[in-house]
Length: 73
Length: 163
Length: 229
Image 1 (cartoon, each protein chain N blue to C red):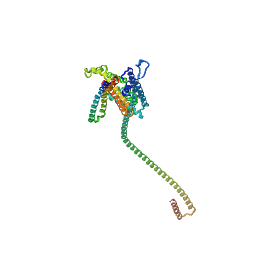
Image 2 (image 1 turned 90 degrees about the horizontal axis):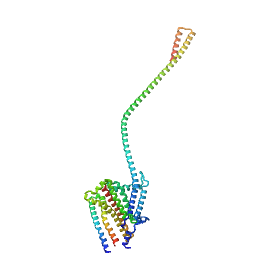
Image 3 (image 1 turned 135 degrees about the horizontal axis):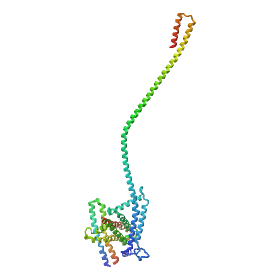
Image 4 (image 1 turned 180 degrees about the vertical axis):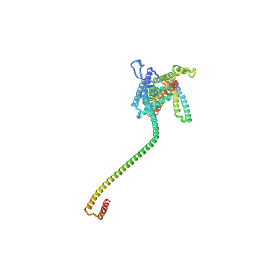
C-alpha cells in the first residue's frame, strides 16, 4: 500500500514540468504584452493554448497516479 | 475506465457525422442561403444605383444642353411674339383706320344726302315762291316801282329762308 | 464513504447503458453514446428553432443572433485553418460543437461523454483521417507520400510515427483533462456538496471544458493546415 502511494506521488511529479512550463510561458507572455500592448488578444490566445498543452502533461501524471491508486492499491 | 469497445468508437463516429450533417444542412446551408440572397440583392441594388446615377448624369447633361437651346429658343419665341404682337397691332390699327374711313365716308354720304334733301326742299320752296310771286305780279298792276319792290322782297324772303 | 470508493464508483462503474440482446455485448451502447444522442438532439432542436422562418429582410433578433454566430464561428474555424483549408471549416465547427457540448455536460450532473475513452478515440481517429485525407486531396497520393520525407529524408520515420502520436496525444489530452476535471469535481462534491463546488465548477466544467475543446480543434486544424500547404 505504501509503495503504491509513493508511486502515485512520483507520478504526480509531472506537475512540476507543467508548472514550470506554464510559469515560463506566462512570464514570456507578460513580457510580450509589456512590449507590445496592442498584440494583447493574440498573445492571450497563444498563452491559453500553450498553457492547455503544457497542462496536458500534468494531466497525464494525474491520470497515471489515479490508475496506480485504483489498479495497484 | 480504460475499456475500449470498437462498436462504441464507431457509434461516436456516427454521432459526429450526424452532427456534421445537421450543422451543414440545417445551420450553415440555411444561413448561407439567406446571406447569399442578401449579398445578391445588395449587389443588384448597387448596380441599379450605379445605373441610375449614370442615367441621372446623362439626363443632367441633356438638360444642360436643352437649357442652352432654350435660351436660343426663348429669343426666337420672343422675336416671334414680338412679330405677332406687331402684326396684331398693325391689324388693329388698320382695322381702326378702315373703320374710321368708313365712318367718314358714311358721314359724308349722309351729309350729301341731307344736303340734297335740303336743296330739294329749298328748290320746292323757291318754286312755290316763284309761283306765288308770279301770281302776285299777275294779280296787281304792275309798275316798275312795284316790280322792283316785289323783286327785292322776293329776294330778301328767299335769302331769309335760305339762311 | 472514503475517497477511494468515490473514485472507484466514478471510474470503474459499468459504462454500458443499453444492453443489446445480440452481439455478445459488443453492440452495447455506452452512456456516452446515448448522452451524445441527447445533446445532438438538443442542438438539432435549437438549430431548427433558430433557423426557422429565415428572411432576407426585416430579420428578427433571433435570426440576427444565429447569423452572427454562424459568421463568427466560421471565421474562427477559417482563421485556424487558413485560406487553403476553408473546406474543412464545417467539420471543425461540428467537432467544436460536439466537444463543447459534451465537455460542459458535467454542469448537469452527468459524466461528460468525453470522459469515455471510446469517444475521444473516435474523435482522434476521425481527426487524423481527416488530416491525411486533406493532405491526399490537396497534394495527391504521391505528394502526400513525399511530404513524409520533408524537410529531410532522415526524419521520415518520425513523421510516420507522428501518424500514431498525433491522435494518441489528441485523445489522451482530452480524456485526461476531462477525467481530471470530473474527478476533482467529484472529490469536491464529496467534501462539501453545497457552495464549494460552484466556483470550481465554473473553472473545471465550463472554462477547462471549452479550452480543451478549443485546443483539440486548434490542433486538428493546425494539422490540416500543415497537410494542405
